[in-house]
Amino acid sequence: MNRPIVVLLAAACAGVLSAAAPETGDRQTPQAPAPGVAEFDDAAPAALEVKRAPTGHVLVRCSVNASEPGWFIFDTGAGICVISTPHVKPLGLRAAGEIEAVGIGGGESAGLVQADSVTVGPLTLRDHPMLVTDLSFLKPHLGEEIQGVLGYGVLARSVAEIDLAEPAVRLHRAGEPGLASLPWEELVLIGRVPAVHARFEGHDGVFRLDTGANGSVTFHEPAVRTLGLLDGRDVDDTKVGGVGGFVAAKRGNLAWFEIGGVRTEGVPALFAIEPKGSFADESRAGNIGVDLLKPFVMYFDYADGRVAFVPRAGG
Image 1 (tube, rainbow, N blue to C red):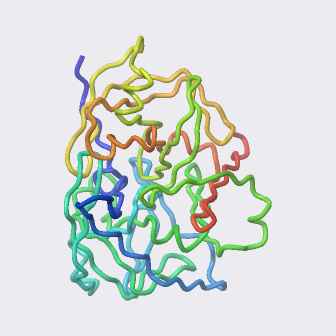
Image 2: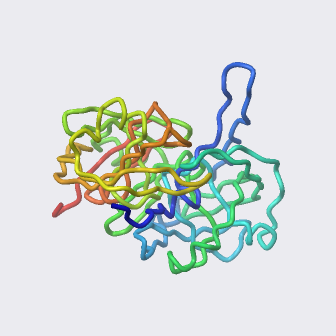
C-alpha cells in the first residue's frame, strides 16, 4: 500500500548536510572550512530566543554581520552553518568558493560565503564560513522566514544545552561550573555530525543525533540489509527526501529503542531500502530525530567528545 511521501524538512534544508572531508586515493573532495574564531560574552544570557515551528523544529534568533536577528533552525545534524540564498546580498556576505554537500539523496555542489560575524546569544563567531542554499520554500511549513541553519560551527565553539520539549537552548562556555557533574557519555563526531551508541531490539549501533529531523528513528540501508530489519516486520512503502533527491524506504514500528539509559516501547521507524546518499553510510546504523530526544535535556560538548542525557522532570 502506497502512502504519501515523507519529507524531512530539516533534511531538505540541510538537516543532514555533512561537509565533505578528504578521501584517500586519487579522488579528493574539498575539506570543510574551519568555523570562525569564537568570542564569548559572559555577561550575556546563556538562553537563546527560541520558538517551536509547527513542524516541531526548534528555531533560534541569530544576527549575521550585526543585522537585525532572524530565525535560524538549530540543527545538530548540520555539518556546517547555512544561510538562505535571498539573504546573502542583503547581509553583505562575501563569496568564498564552493563545497560538496552530502544529503539524503546524494551529493551536490553548493556555494560558500564568509560572514564577518555570526552572533547567537552570548557567542559570536568571527570570519565564519556558511553554506548557501535556498530555504525560502520552508516559510509555509515553519511559519517564519528562515534565514539559515545553525549547526557544527556554533556547537563546536560552545557547550549547547538543548531541551526540545520546552523548547529551550542555552550556550555555555566550556568549563563552566556545574558541567562536570553531568552524566557524560561518549560522543562520536562523523562528518561533523554527532552520533552516540544506542540499543534496539537486541542490537547495538551508532546513530546520528539530529535535532533538525522530525520523527523518531530512520535506519540506513546497510543496517536494514545486514541486520534483516525488515524480516517479519509489518511495513508499508514511503520515501524520505532531502539534499540530492529522494530515497525509497519502508515504514513500520520497532519493539523498543534505548538511548541515554531510557527505553521507549513501540517506536515508529523508517527503513531506507536504497543505498544512496547519506543513507548508504555504513559507519552509522541510522538517524535519531526529535521524538526520541524530547524526554531529555541534552548537553553537547563537541570539543571534549561527550554528550549528556539528563531525563526531564516528569518524563
